[in-house]
Image 1: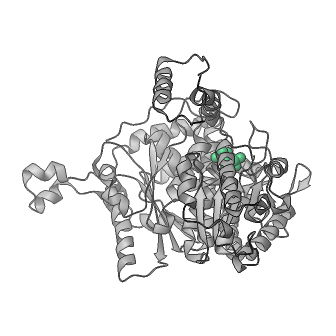
Image 2: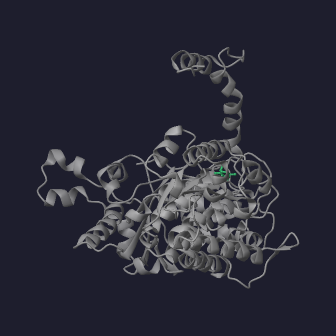
Image 3: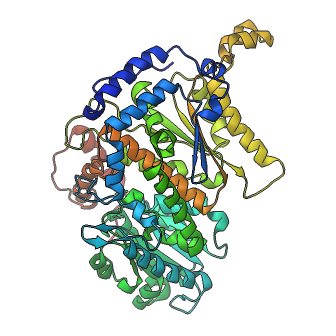
Length: 552
Ligand code: G6Q
């Protein structure tokens, strides 16, 4: 199975522990999880930790006590403790953009104080939360009326990336707690189909648009916002309708006002909230309208409980630190390229997509904080689907393929929708999958079962495939908040070890700029003469030949 990672250089700060880990990996290479469990009957309980209502079982990883000791040493050598403190106290840990990264302040309790760059931020956060709560209650109760006096039945969030993935994920995850007399839709793609399908059955007199954009300059969001505005004005026959049917979430008051949204109906946040870390800010307005202010506060409280744990718990019992370090082990020392996120809960169907942005936009980096080229592997590829659907799709490769795919299983002990024995069946599948991945089935076992010789190789499961299991009592707003914060901080832990900046995203710039430049070549009847490579040139020509030109 999968080749071992080529251990190139190590992050400068952690070189000693890194080298020891590389040597240790060679020693441990031949040891199967079967052996590790057989020689330590209490391994399953020992290699676990619990915080903020989440239980983490990390025993089914290819590690022993020495691996853990060295990983923890690596964390200390890389100054993880200082980096955690720097983030929580508002240091400019986002170095390339010269900003703090204070998503933790979004969930700090009322009354706490934190002065950042001379400004007390927690009271500002609480003020916006209070305004959001008043507005959300007005929409939920029907006090907020549309232009014709009808109550709002549909809420459409228009945003993309961090201004979409968190809100969609949270809405789906907490649907059980949502007001069922309201419909929620999310429009992100600049593909007109997204807007058209999201609004085709909606009555504009009952529809509220939330334009969510930190910068209020994002072309996809502004294009959809203009489409929404035209749809609304055409339906209601009055420009003045915008006031009752549009609100904005942004840091850019001028842009919001220019668009025509009353800034009284704007909910702000701050440059120290990164897009993919913003679901607990005003970007969560659609979530708050869906589940109500009280449940939204519970979501924040769950996140805060995990924040406090990350900041204070010893590394050896610290969930985000352990999850992050195990990911480093699998990625940098065992050569795994990806991580599968496998929630055994239908409500978490968008969680893998959400984590994909959180992890990959944060840690898909090739240079250190100082801009030096990195010689080791950074962020793994995140992907996944809810169980049990994935089992009937890609699990074959997880069990018998040639690639090593570490898995995070996520489950809840109580279901929100009891249906006969189906929840037990669901969770039996979760536990069985992690057991099968770890222990497999040997040729001897198959022969003893009478499996014909010609099929033994095909039916052998070699096992030794690593996984974590995250288990919580019930999918509540607080549990979701804790889960999100757990992964945010696990991403930060990994970034600290790799010595990279997880809070910028320069890699999305080039494609955006080229698309803007290229637009006239696709739109104008006489194409400007722009030099391209032969592939891009041929594609542009073909598109121009086959597209439908507007008739004048
Ligand atoms: C996330 C990124 C990115 C961002 C979107 C939307 O961390 O910064 O996904 O959220 O590009 O940006 P706006 O909210 O400014 O429209």
